[in-house]
Length: 80
Image (cartoon, rainbow, N blue to C red; front, top):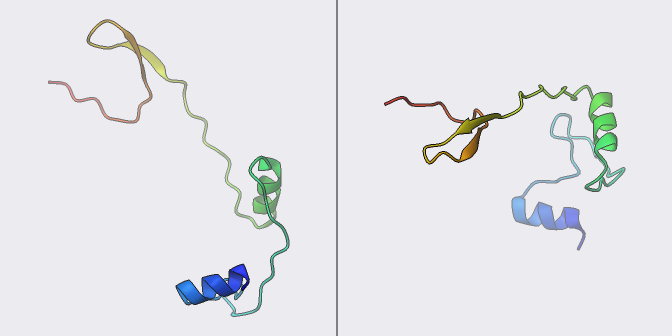
């Protein structure tokens, strides 16, 4: 049984059927882990590529016990 048939059987959806028009789709390529440039090229072609927003570097701060720590800005500080 093919991978598409297994997905169809388990999830009751055809992975090779276009969700927009109902047309038949086919696999044209498999992308491996270390092919970021291929992923970018495909997404740019489809108009789905978004540039990453640069994040500021973490700020070195001192934690309560005097040890240096990093503030990544993930959580709001609460002053008590």
